[in-house]
Length: 243
Image (cartoon, rainbow, N blue to C red):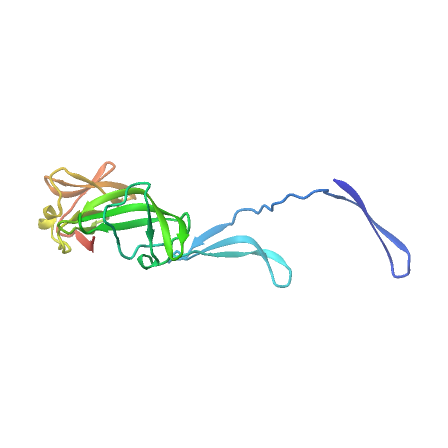
């Protein structure tokens, strides 16, 4: 710290002294602010609003205000990329802009889909964009999961509502149509007795659902110290996505 004395003259020429002040001889190269009081994400995920942050008004005043951050929409592959062989982990592939809703950002991860028509294999992989080469994105395969598409496979995104239980899960079958809302056809979705399939959802007072199971009494949702048996009032929704 260094001491400075502030002096000046009145309009009549007399001197005035305002006293001495401690002034730092060096300043830090950063500025620190308190964290925002609230952080809200818009319904479509395209904008984040930070409230309770410092805001500079047009007149020069400083007050508490908001900061808005506009985010890019999530990157999504619109169609699978045709390949001869399924890509391996660590391999890089070039993907043109026509495969995406927008070009992936460098270092951005996304769900990559490739299809080998000759080998009837659909590969679902997590890929990372490492660089841009013109309109192409160079993408590195981080992990992969191969799905045989011979015969053609369909993803069934199923939601089951039974009283205060809501259960969701996805299965892959060669059945092209959505399953009707009838308990008698549940065996057709590939469940066998006592087989457990991971599921997500809640029962009653937000108890987590671990899985669904086809047991002796039919399909049931299993949770901590609680189960819900499905009956004729059960509502089933099935959204089918061709792979």
